[in-house]
Image (cartoon, rainbow, N blue to C red; front, side, top):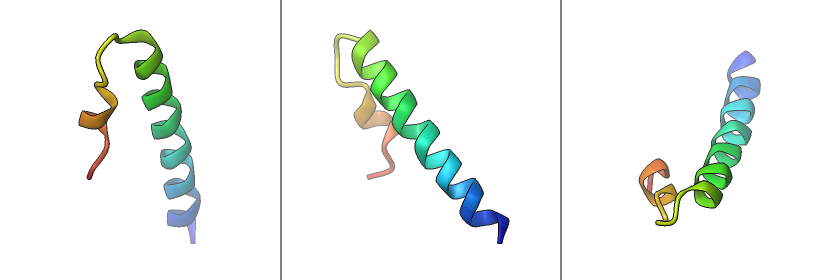
Length: 36
């Protein structure tokens, strides 16, 4: 249902945010954003 679209959007947004922070911040803070 809609959960698949929401999951896909959140996944793309998460990857975008992780890439943005990885480029902006000097330290790998993206590891804190990842669930694992």
